[in-house]
Length: 103
Image 1 (cartoon, rainbow, N blue to C red):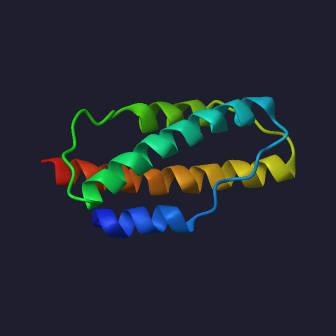
Image 2 (cartoon, rainbow, N blue to C red):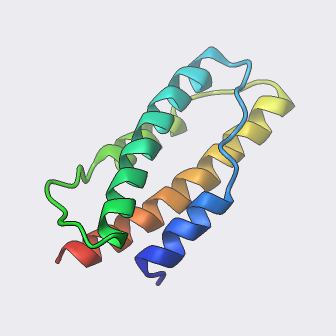
């Protein structure tokens, strides 16, 4: 189990996935980007000693469920799809660490 600093550093080490040709995946990635920014703000605040309130707990679950419904056809988009899955896992690790800090 990673602590917040380790989880956030791991997330930061991952490149944000490239933009795909698939419109559905591209639209999904806009939400991923927004949620990533929100999560980064929370992590930076917590690492700086700030108080955490109202962590949106289900955003990543909803994103994961929506990602599973997207069907990509090209091999390039399939590689990007897998990058998105990996990036989402890293975001979940940060969220789990934030939840432990909040308690």
